[in-house]
Length: 105
Image (cartoon, rainbow, N blue to C red):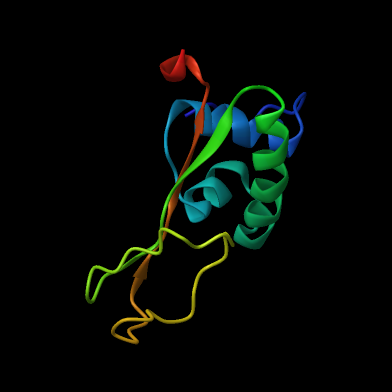
Protein backbone atom coordinates (compact mmCIF):
# COMPACT_ATOMS: atom_id res chain seq x y z
CA UNK A 1 0.00 0.00 0.00
CA UNK A 2 1.06 3.52 -0.70
CA UNK A 3 2.46 5.41 2.30
CA UNK A 4 0.66 8.53 3.43
CA UNK A 5 1.59 11.57 1.35
CA UNK A 6 1.23 15.02 2.82
CA UNK A 7 0.69 16.73 -0.56
CA UNK A 8 -2.67 14.95 -1.01
CA UNK A 9 -5.96 15.35 0.81
CA UNK A 10 -7.27 12.47 2.92
CA UNK A 11 -9.83 11.65 0.22
CA UNK A 12 -7.17 11.57 -2.48
CA UNK A 13 -5.13 9.25 -0.28
CA UNK A 14 -8.13 6.96 0.28
CA UNK A 15 -8.79 6.82 -3.47
CA UNK A 16 -5.13 6.01 -4.10
CA UNK A 17 -5.06 3.19 -1.56
CA UNK A 18 -8.40 1.74 -2.69
CA UNK A 19 -7.25 1.82 -6.33
CA UNK A 20 -4.56 -0.68 -5.39
CA UNK A 21 -6.44 -3.03 -3.07
CA UNK A 22 -9.82 -3.69 -1.44
CA UNK A 23 -9.77 -2.74 2.26
CA UNK A 24 -12.15 -2.40 5.19
CA UNK A 25 -12.78 0.95 6.87
CA UNK A 26 -10.73 -0.31 9.81
CA UNK A 27 -7.79 -1.09 7.51
CA UNK A 28 -8.03 2.36 5.94
CA UNK A 29 -8.13 3.91 9.39
CA UNK A 30 -4.86 2.22 10.32
CA UNK A 31 -3.11 3.03 7.04
CA UNK A 32 -4.07 6.70 7.05
CA UNK A 33 -3.97 7.36 10.78
CA UNK A 34 -7.55 8.63 11.06
CA UNK A 35 -10.57 7.39 13.02
CA UNK A 36 -12.72 4.68 11.47
CA UNK A 37 -15.81 6.89 11.73
CA UNK A 38 -14.04 9.53 9.63
CA UNK A 39 -13.33 6.93 6.96
CA UNK A 40 -17.06 6.25 6.53
CA UNK A 41 -17.78 9.98 6.23
CA UNK A 42 -15.11 10.34 3.54
CA UNK A 43 -16.32 7.25 1.63
CA UNK A 44 -19.77 8.81 1.14
CA UNK A 45 -18.20 11.84 -0.57
CA UNK A 46 -15.69 9.75 -2.49
CA UNK A 47 -18.47 7.63 -4.00
CA UNK A 48 -20.13 10.79 -5.37
CA UNK A 49 -16.95 12.37 -6.72
CA UNK A 50 -15.77 9.15 -8.39
CA UNK A 51 -18.95 8.92 -10.47
CA UNK A 52 -18.05 12.24 -12.12
CA UNK A 53 -14.66 10.75 -13.09
CA UNK A 54 -16.16 7.62 -14.73
CA UNK A 55 -15.02 5.57 -11.74
CA UNK A 56 -16.98 3.95 -8.94
CA UNK A 57 -16.59 2.89 -5.34
CA UNK A 58 -17.27 -0.83 -5.20
CA UNK A 59 -18.54 -2.16 -1.87
CA UNK A 60 -18.31 -5.85 -1.04
CA UNK A 61 -21.29 -5.94 1.36
CA UNK A 62 -21.63 -6.81 5.02
CA UNK A 63 -22.20 -10.52 5.72
CA UNK A 64 -23.51 -12.26 8.81
CA UNK A 65 -20.96 -14.73 10.15
CA UNK A 66 -23.71 -16.73 11.87
CA UNK A 67 -26.04 -17.56 8.98
CA UNK A 68 -24.29 -16.12 5.92
CA UNK A 69 -26.92 -13.47 5.16
CA UNK A 70 -25.52 -10.83 2.78
CA UNK A 71 -26.62 -7.22 3.22
CA UNK A 72 -26.51 -6.59 -0.54
CA UNK A 73 -29.35 -4.04 -0.66
CA UNK A 74 -28.00 -1.89 2.17
CA UNK A 75 -27.34 1.71 1.08
CA UNK A 76 -25.70 3.04 4.25
CA UNK A 77 -22.02 2.35 4.76
CA UNK A 78 -22.16 2.11 8.55
CA UNK A 79 -22.36 -1.26 10.29
CA UNK A 80 -25.81 -2.81 10.82
CA UNK A 81 -26.71 -3.68 14.40
CA UNK A 82 -28.10 -7.18 13.85
CA UNK A 83 -28.77 -9.69 11.12
CA UNK A 84 -32.43 -9.56 10.02
CA UNK A 85 -32.50 -13.33 9.48
CA UNK A 86 -30.85 -14.83 12.61
CA UNK A 87 -30.65 -11.67 14.81
CA UNK A 88 -26.92 -12.35 15.29
CA UNK A 89 -24.47 -9.54 15.91
CA UNK A 90 -21.35 -11.15 14.40
CA UNK A 91 -21.19 -9.26 11.12
CA UNK A 92 -18.21 -9.23 8.76
CA UNK A 93 -17.05 -5.79 7.68
CA UNK A 94 -17.40 -4.77 4.03
CA UNK A 95 -14.42 -4.11 1.82
CA UNK A 96 -14.17 -1.10 -0.45
CA UNK A 97 -12.28 -0.69 -3.72
CA UNK A 98 -12.12 1.87 -6.51
CA UNK A 99 -13.18 0.57 -9.91
CA UNK A 100 -11.38 2.67 -12.52
CA UNK A 101 -13.76 1.73 -15.30
CA UNK A 102 -11.02 0.07 -17.37
CA UNK A 103 -12.78 -3.29 -17.07
CA UNK A 104 -16.04 -1.78 -18.34
CA UNK A 105 -14.56 -0.46 -21.61
